[in-house]
Length: 269
Image 1 (cartoon, rainbow, N blue to C red):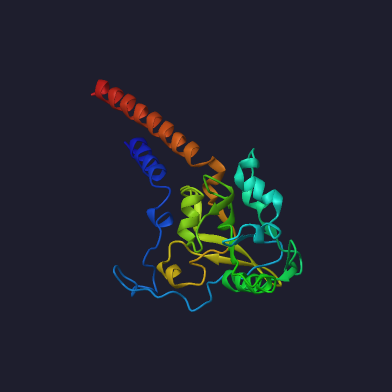
Image 2: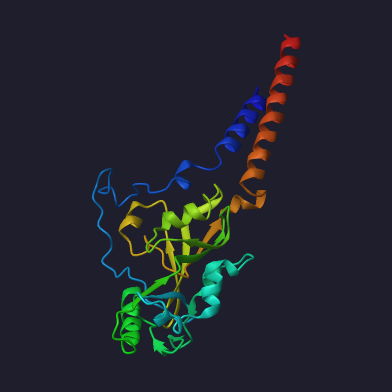
């Protein structure tokens, strides 16, 4: 009887080794009980406008009623690739866009070097617009944009590597969705964000369990962010699929043992 109770205890421990509290997003943790359902949560008072950094790539297009006016300002290779001449794989935006140098300057045909580093997308577009207006009396429209939000996902994601979200603003949960739902073996209370700043890099840690994340400055991701999810210690048993298979095998073996013990006990009676 003691042996049977031991097996039941062993089965219970294996079947409940990972608590739901360790895998559930946006919980009402101690200290933030005021954040309930339907509660209005304002964004953190920070500037969410991304400022262009050295080595960023931007797309700059020119348009006018007279197309001959703008041909001299367009990189002809980019024009051909946009028209379908690029072929093959890879990031088309990288080949058709303009890269900022280490000092934040972008070099455009005829216009030369323009310093747009440290500017928002709108401010950079305005600066290029002012530069081209010096050449023509006729209006030439400039469109400058960042090629979506590029970030890198590492660790316990099902789709690791560099990802792209084609939006001007994206939340941390947009990034999690693009990178694949994190496995049950991820430490969701320890998501590291490696973020690039003008003078260097910082490492930030956020807790995906905590509803206060919605009001934090890290609710929105930025271009060039690196997201890293640590694995739990149980990771030594393998990934989530392997762990599930192992538990299934243990349960099957335990069930067989229970059946044998029951049969043996019945014969003795």
